[in-house]
Image (cartoon, rainbow, N blue to C red; front, side, top):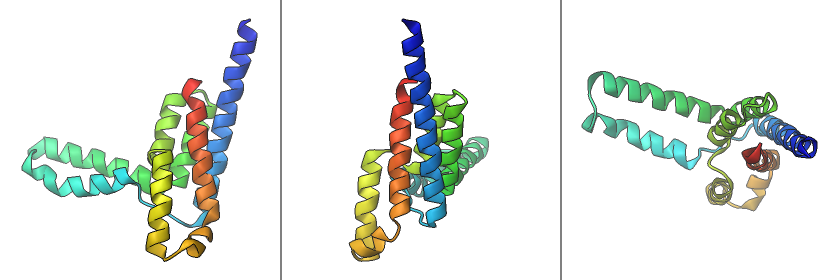
Amino acid sequence: MCIVDCQSVVFRAYLAGTLALVGGLLMFTSGYASKGVLYTALGYAVPRLSDFLSGTELSATVLAITVLELLMALGGITVMAGGFTILIRHSTVGRTLIWLGGGAGFLSLVLGFGYAVFRLGGLSPVLSYLPYWVGLAFAILGRRLAKGS
C-alpha cells in the first residue's frame, strides 16, 4: 500500500524537478528576460524604506531585497536551481526558487505575455521568444507538481 504512494510521490518529484530544469534551461538560452510583478514592486519599495526604517534595520532590509532581486533577475538559472533542489527532495525550497526565478505563477505568465505583446508591438516579436514562454510554462507546471511531494 505504501509502495504505490511512495512511488507516485517520487515520480511526481522527479517529473517536477525535470520540468523545472528543462524550463529553466529554455528560459536561460532564449536570451529573453521579463520582470515579474514582485520585482517591480520591490523596486518601488526600496526608495520608500527610509521613511519607515533607519540604521541597521534599513541596511538589513535593503540587503534582503537586493538578494531577492538578484535571484529574480537570474531567471532561468534560479529556476534550474529550483528544479535541482526538487530533485534532491527539498521541494519547498525548490518551489520558492522557481517562484522567484519564474514569477508568481500562471497569472504572472499571462500578465507578462500580455505586457510583452504590448511593449514589443505585437504578437510576432513576442513569439520569437517562444522558448522563454515554453520554459516559463514548464517551470510553473513543475512548481505546481512539486506542491504535493
